[in-house]
Image (cartoon, rainbow, N blue to C red; front, side, top):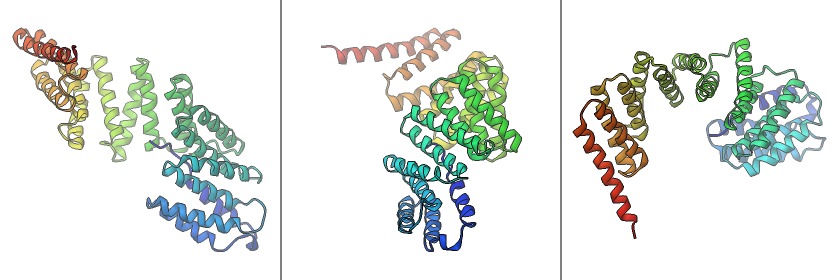
Length: 362
């Protein structure tokens, strides 16, 4: 997944800055080409957008004069289009050129910070997280210098740096940045946005990994409320969070609270992915485990069978996930006192393993 970039502010700020320049300083022609390039990108026509930005850049660079705002902005926007197409090698030097130009012009800190954030996102996409971390920190310092630390794009930078720390297992540092973002969103009235929901779940995931279920629970609940309010209650991220909350309730022994959540997850996955998808098998298995914990064996059994059939069809009878599902299903049957039925399942696993041994023997 591509890391979020902060391009919308660049073009808007440029037009505001250029409106104060003398008329003779503006080169006619490139403005319309740039507007067409922006429209092409917004419609998903990245190749056309790149062609138009290069055309605008050619007009701008052939106009005599010192380093100019319009050139730096077009360099940045062309870099963004390249990055949209995973042409990172082409994008990187353009970001660097745009930053170098802006650094020579007073009052361009917001533009510099945005381009630095974009370059950091590129490094992250290239798995160069050490470079990304350094560039995000530079961007944050620039936002601070500009007095714009509560700007939407600055918060994007904060969260993106937190995501890097999260991926690196530096959870304490990620937690600080995520909470910093929450504080700004609360202050600026943006705490009910999709970006906030995603960040709430990421911090919740950190707490779950640390078995801090009581701290994770309200974050998941808040994120789910946002997705419900914004019409995204069946999005993949919302479904994953619903699963996480159900797992927390199950871990805490709150079975009656977990049951409707995991039932909803299974229904939504079947609707979105079809009944034979491995994700459906995982949710069927989760719900079966919950029923097993509640000793609702009659409800659990068809779900174990469903999970087993889907996994065996998709993965083959010898896959570890299939064998593990058989083992759990057989263990439940033994709990019920159905030893003969459990033995049939166990014998099938043994026969599968024997067949593998025979095929690999010399």
